[in-house]
Every structure is written in structure tokens, then in C-alpha cells.
Length: 385
Image (tube, rainbow, N blue to C red; front, top):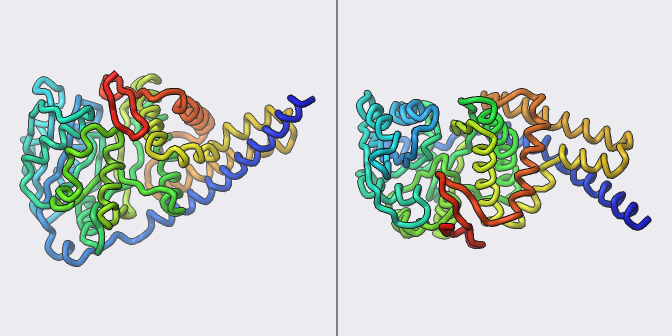
């Protein structure tokens, strides 16, 4: 009797959480649509002068779509001088040939920097340190290798950096799967989980994001936070850079634009390893927020609640309601971003997968990154296993 009462109470508790998650899905869809329809800042000093910029791209390997992503950044509609620096740590890396081909094309000046020097456990940050030493201009704009942008990207980012009190600029992003079903599942996770949750967290003041999709800042701001060297052992280097900028009393602005994260996961294992690293990163840098994000997994919670409640009609109705809300969110995200990551009928599977990754994230501190295994300390510091 006691066990039955406990399971019944748990069922109703999970049903309540699922209902809350359903409401949040509708709210986050509306907030995302409103946010991305907002005006881009027009910082007067920057809009009038179009300052010269150094674009920094740390490369590793040759993921699908890399050449197109690099060309999108090289071929910007921007009147100022653009210097693009492509950093590679291994002269035998497959990225060398692609970087060379991009450097030989028209458009911005492109410099390939090959430097194997390591400065810490985070190899991407080591790459950034090596590239930044070769940069010529006072504005540095870095982005991950798998980010593709539109022609007006630089204008929007530089204009936002010119706004009063802004110390850095970052960008929201959508996903695009390019190599098969697992990469499309990855894109769906970005578009229908990450993006609306990020906008919701920002709107509620619960999140203070800074993403590797874009970090633009002045050279003097980078110097004031101690340079990239400070983050050489950090797993969440992008988040930590944003936190350091805010500690100076400056804002990390996020303009109402999205860039594209090109998803190239070719297997279930690649997808799970990637998403587990992301999820454990959040767990390490924001444990309360990560635990609280349980309610965003409305569909799996509704299914578990229905099972505990004996699949009562009300519980079955809740499952249907969660699916309806998630479909509404997908349609609104697709409409406002122009990016359709996958079909609506895959949403239940995508949601179950996300919930599984969420649960596994609590089971250990280890992550896999660029083929290497690391243990992540409570303060987000990487240690080789």
C-alpha cells in the first residue's frame, strides 16, 4: 500500500512537471519568435567607421561543410578590412588543405597559422592563443569551425559591439544536419531544445550565455580579462570568457540573429558523445539550472507519469498535449529561423534521446573531446584521464 501511494504521488508530481514543461514550450516558442524579430543594434561609432577586424577560426580535422563555412565568413558584405586567421595545430591535419584552398580564393585576406604549441588541456584554447598572436587588428571575432554565417553577419556583430557598455558579442545558433540521420537528430536537439531554452533562460534572467558560435571583443577587453591563456584548462571556455567580461562591468550582447552550426555526427555514438559533453558542461557550470531543466523534458515526463498513473485518460491527454506543444514550438522555430532541422514525427524520439542524455550526465565527470578523454572537476577544469 505504501509503495503504491508513493508511486501514485510520484506520478502526479511528474505529471505536474510535464504540464509545466508544456507551458514553458509554448512560452519559449513565443519568446524566441519575438526575440529574433527584434532590431539589430546600430552602434553609431562602429556603424559609421566599419573598423578593421581579425576573424579567428580554430580548426581541427575536416568535418563536412568546413570549406563552405569558412567561405561564408571570408566573403562578408563588410566595408572594413577583414583579416581571417585559420589556426591548425598539426601540419598533417586534413584541415590544412581546406584552409589553403580557402586562403587561395577571392575576398578577405586569409592567413593559415600552423602552430603545435600547447598551453593547457583545452586544445581549442591553445589554438586560439596561437592564432591571436598573429592577429593585426583591434577587434577580434572568433567562432567555432562548424559555424556558417550569412553575408550581413559581420555588420550586425560589429554594430552590436559598438553599443554602449558592451564588452563582447555572442550569437544564438540553429543546427543543420549534413551527413545523415544522426546529424539531423543533432540539429533537432539544437533547434527545438537548446535555442528556445537559451532564449527562455535569458528572458527570465536565469542564464547569462556566451557561445562559441561567436565571441567578438576588443583586444583591450581580452587583455583586461587576462587573455585566452586564462581559459587554457577550462571545458566551458566560451562561457568563462563571457563571465570574465561581465566581471569587468561590461555586457555580453546577443543580437537578434542566428548563425548555423553544421552538424556532422555520422553515428549514434558521435551524437551521444557530443551531447553528453555539452550536457556535462552545463552540469559543471550551473548545477541548479541543470537540475531545474528537468521540467523542459515534458514528453518523457508525461509518458513516465502516465505509466505510474495506470494510463488514466487524463494522463494520456497530457501526453497528447505535450506533443501538441512541442509541435507548435517546432513550427514557430522553423518559421522564424528559416531552418527546418527534421520532421515533426521525430520529435518524440528526439525528446526521449535528450532526456536520456540528461539523466546520464549525472553519472560521472568524464567527457570525450577531439578523440581524447578528460575528467572535469567541479570548477569546470579539464584533466587528462
